[in-house]
Amino acid sequence: MSQTTRIVAFVLIGLIVGAAIGWVVYPMMNPIGPDYVKKSVYDTLKTESDKTKADLAKVQANLTAANAQIQKLLAPKKIGLILATGGLGDKSFNDIAYAGCVKAKNELGITFDHVQPKAIAEYAGYQTDFAKTGQYALIICVGFDQADALNVTAAAYPNQKFAIIDMPVFQPNVASLLFKANEGSFLVGVVAAMKSKTNKVGFVGGMDIPLIRDFYVGYEAGAKWAKPGITVYPPSFVNNWADPTKAKELTISLSELGVDAVFAAAGKSGLGALEAAHQKGITGLGVDACQCYLYPEVVASATKRVDIAVYDVILQTILGKFQSGLYSKGVAEGYTGCCRLPEEEKFWEQTFSFKHSALSSEINDKLRQARDKISAGEVTVPSGFT
Image (cartoon, rainbow, N blue to C red; front, side, top):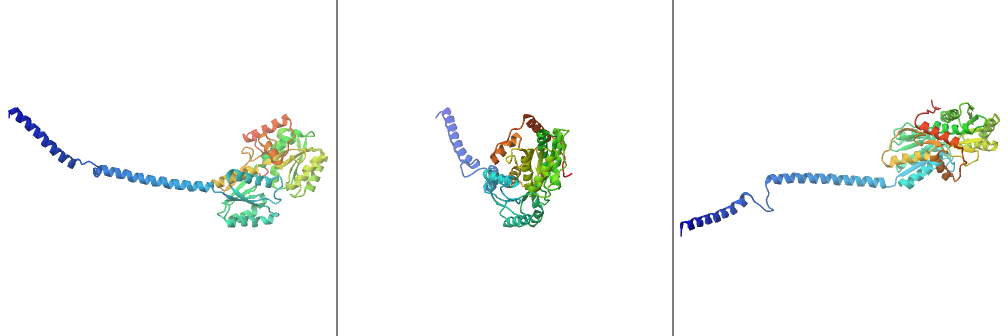
């Protein structure tokens, strides 16, 4: 064997032995396969795995909570509605409040029960009957004369949510929904002044109380804003909410003084005032809901959109956003207005199935100008509460 051959042979043997030693040693120093990883790698992976599991648990918990909330929102909410005395069919507060609940039923999926008290003395009993069941997400009380009873009932059932229309009740579980009647009255004052040929307009109120004075001062301000030289007679009061005969007599007396436009804010008594306007052929102005369907002489009505207020408070309640306190809204928010405004006219015509008589473009323009200036804060309407 030559020297060269020996060298090659030794090299080959060395390579083979080295490869063999490397094959034996490498797996021991750098093991491979599914059964073994470095501890540092393992620790890192375990930390990340634990974090992922914790995050997943939070996501699952959030999903469970979200699903529960969705089911809660989708579940029908029960509302209690206690109407004012006079009940349904009054073409005013009660009918419009009821319409707000019907809209909430159709659009929000609520259910509601309603009662029709015959006397003020029945309010406390109905409020208590609803509250003690614990079944109602909200109990709505229509009318300022429910306030005394509600003060007692709300205190007795602090976990029950209530809303009252047209009167403040300062309890932590009551939302008081008030309407700036003076602003809507300002608008019909504009119409009364613009329609008047004698430049004399009058007002018939149910009771001499701040609530009705609020209607009067707004009406007076609107008439004088539209026609500065007009005479607005002092208010005539029936001193009764349900004496249309007396209201009719007062209106006839005003007409004999030359008054040719009368605004009636007198509950059921006001129907007598509007009947007198019809008989004497003078302009009549309705209140709360559109009353223009009654007679051709009734050409406009100051409106309180109780339906909107009722719907709003139901919506906030089922969304879990009910808040107690005092909410006073007017023309800018659409809570008060006039049935002859373009945003209201069709609603009232559809509600009471009639068609308004036409107003002149001059009156329409002045009415919209008044609305816009009140909404923008450029006209501040005086209040009967100050």
